[in-house]
Length: 175
Image (cartoon, rainbow, N blue to C red; front, side, top):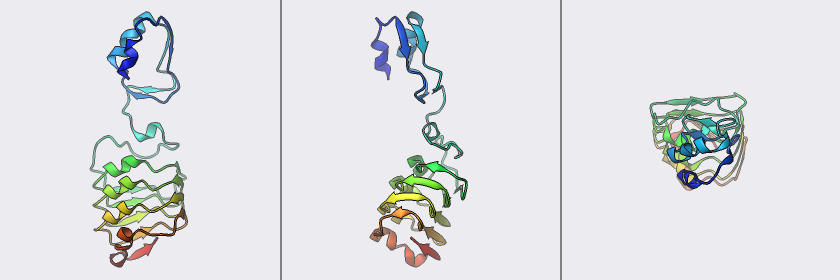
């Protein structure tokens, strides 16, 4: 944060290395570097790079989410992915196929995936380690006709009404 630039009396040992920080160092903080010995900020960080979910994902094989919304397919079926599903996938509003099945993804299904309102072909998260409940926001997939599959996870049994309402229009339904 820019407030670190207020440490004007500091003369030695400014260490924020190995924290997986990204983006740019604020000008106010950079101004301190000329008067500080032992200035360590770049080692173990990604200073000067775009702060995306890859900086904290266990597995960074997903494409960069850099503000572009033109991506239409996310398909990483059986790639051995671990960690959580990034909430930033909800920014890719043109996605019509979302297939992350047969990996080792864990924790919850992000509610932000409900922003994928162009979802029409496949929504597959089966055979992972996902837990908790199915987000009601997945009921926003009004165009989905082919597959909605979440089986072989650790999800709660209750399917929200908003999601259940999609079942009649989907060929391969298996929550």
